[in-house]
Amino acid sequence: MKQPVIRKLRCAVYTRKSSEEGLEMEFNSLDAQREACEAFIASQKSEGWILHQDRYDDGGVSGGTLERPALKRLLADIAQSKIDVVVCYKIDRLSRSLLDFTKLVEVFDRHEVTFVSTTQSFNTTTSMGRLTLNMLLSFAQFEREVIGERIRDKFAASRKRGIWMGGWTPLGYDVKDRKLIVNEAEAATVRMLFEQFVKLGSATKLVAQATKDGVKNKNGKPIDKSFLYKVIRNPVYIGEAVHKGTSYPGEHQAIIGRKLWDKVRAIIKISPRTRAGHTRAKTPSLLKGLIFGPNGLALTPTHTRRGGKLYRYYVSTAVASSGRAACPVGLIPAGSIETAVIDQIQALVAAPEIVVATWKAARKADPSVTEENVRGALVSFKGLWNELFPEEQSRIVRLLVERVDILAESVSIRLHVDGLASLVGDLKADRERAAA
Image (tube, rainbow, N blue to C red):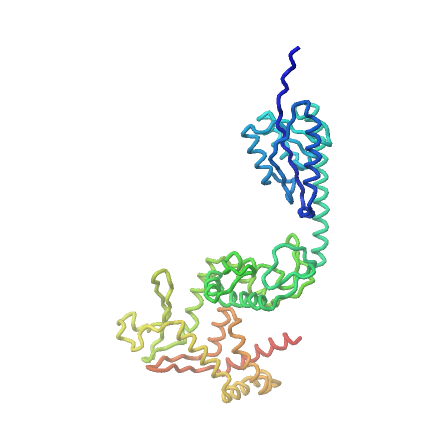
């Protein structure tokens, strides 16, 4: 009697392990899964099962995604009709997601491929096998979701205690014993970025300046705007740990102070386009109404654009009606004259005669003010200037300066002594609040 021809079924073994722990061992979990599957295939030799020699091993990959290198190779070989049976140790090795597994079964059915689990006996070509499969897979997904909830709860509890839970290590810190430790060299860079952002009010300008100065990120690459915003928006730098929008006191040391953080936050709240407009609008007005030419006529701010770049100037009002010849100094670059005026103000306020005159004026409002108070406040003015917003700088210039005269070869500045006395009062109050 003629023997029936048994069809040869090419069996591919798929193995997976979620974590990389133990994969470096000579005989690891993937090897154990494969050995069990190969033994099962050998037991079905009478049914025509033969082992497909290619290995499909995904080590350190979650079962909650289909983005797995070995799985993609397996599906590609199935599409090319190289495989008849897919064998796994357990169904959750193929997928822990019911939706993903349904997609895989559809692919298997389309190419007439059978899925088999060596420890959970069923056949996906029958309705009962599908029911059993879905029940087992539902429990696998339930287990995965419970584990996820447990991890999320632990993470949230740890963050509330201010514990560092890993992830991207912020510039300015190193991780030691699962804790953030300040890296002083990088911390200086972080402080510079915060301070310069307050000074410039523009991420674009700051990135350009930082690139020119050779500032690098944690990986040694030049910083860009995306990285800059990650830094200046990260509450870790004021010693906080954030979880789902809520801040908690962190275990780590802060790198910047709350005052500087608040200044940066105030600037960020304004859109970049508005900030750029404000910068152009505020800066030219620093000496508006205070600066005069050699002929005694006021100079007014103006600007022009060349090659997409803004150039600011001060020009005599006479020029508008009579041409350039009406004023001997012509166009004065705004940046240069403003810097020169500020430098002279900072030098003048420290002069002994100005200190004494300011002290006498200040005593009228506050008899307790001493000459030492006045001298200390005026000396601190220089360091304070660069921390001020443009509006505050403009206010102080108008408080201190009565008139700026542009002469043929020099600049003359007249100060308000009463304005200096008012400034001393403000500085004295600031220092007392800081000391408290």
